[in-house]
Length: 274
Image 1: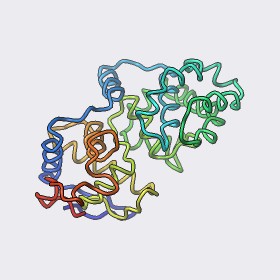
Image 2: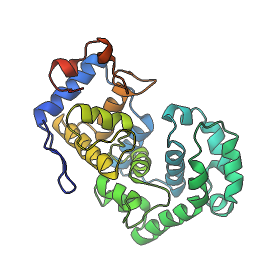
Image 3: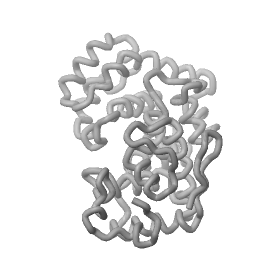
Image 4: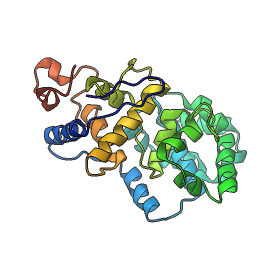
């Protein structure tokens, strides 16, 4: 089905299998899932050449930070409170405010996770890195548009990235860039687990995703998109995620519904090996 990945080898997905997977998921869910509207709207803006402000970049960066370990719907439900807490992403304010003030504000917005306690203190430094990108290239978007989506992710989230953002790894970098309209997948546990069950992603270690897991999953999603009449990578990511995630179709979670006897087209077609 797919050539297994190694440290230096990118998995290759058979085009027919890629098409069969998309058709099977769409047929089971009856309709395309509700895609990430922010990502798709910004993708259209980016493709039309519309520039983004640094405030918009910082907003999406902050939301990617806050989404770590928290369902996206839970973050968006608090959007008004978050925007107010960050002073509507005023750059001068965020570069000068005491991080403890921001942390206190976020604590009052009932989040289940506390990863932000590490991320908020370095936000001003990350803003400085974004400003450096803009200075070096004329704008942040000129830089990101000049390289591939994967290169963009690695440049800000990879260990040796040219503009490595503090407390931002591969997954959160992909989340931020996707929401800025860059056509990239942000493979989380749901997506990586499903790709592993489809025998496309090797060396999957459960919820403790390695950087290699995420990068390979990004490549696989890109190949699936290319095989399906240039379907966007964002939509492939959403399709796979929706099939698994709580609050979405919820079929292929940690314990898939096929385990209790429900029919799965992926298994019927011999695509899934759960």
